[in-house]
Image (cartoon, rainbow, N blue to C red; front, side, top):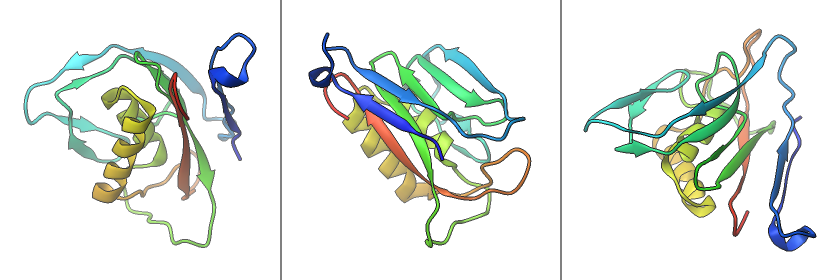
Amino acid sequence: MCDTMVALGNSTEDGSILFAKNSDRDVNEAHELLIIPGKKYPEKSKTKCTYIEIPQSKSTNTILLAKPFWIWGCEMGANEHGVVIGNEAVFTKAKVRKEPGLIGMDFIRLALERTKTAFEALKTIIGLLETYGQSGNCSYEHPLYYHNSFLIGDRKEA
């Protein structure tokens, strides 16, 4: 399982915010670091996530992603407004959906692209879950299906 942590400014000696995450991907799933500049999009544009297309927002934020090479989304990232998000695989007795859909890593990128605060990111992820649900294979080398939890932070809250 991954490990994710955040310490807000009221917990650090100098008031800085710390965010950290490790990733327990398979050994052949190399991560890449990408900076993707913000952009404006024409009305009715679509964005191709890992498995499905969904409506694109009118504009996106500049984002920094740490992502497995084959996934559109990311394991962790930050945006130009200081929002940070990391995910954790959650294995429960709850049934997982296997058809292609949005995977947990897609939710992170979509929230980072579209929001300015941790609370907005939370609302965005909830809205995407309500609209599209969560489904799809989350492994490059073998079938692996799971739910995700997210640690979301910004300069004020997590």
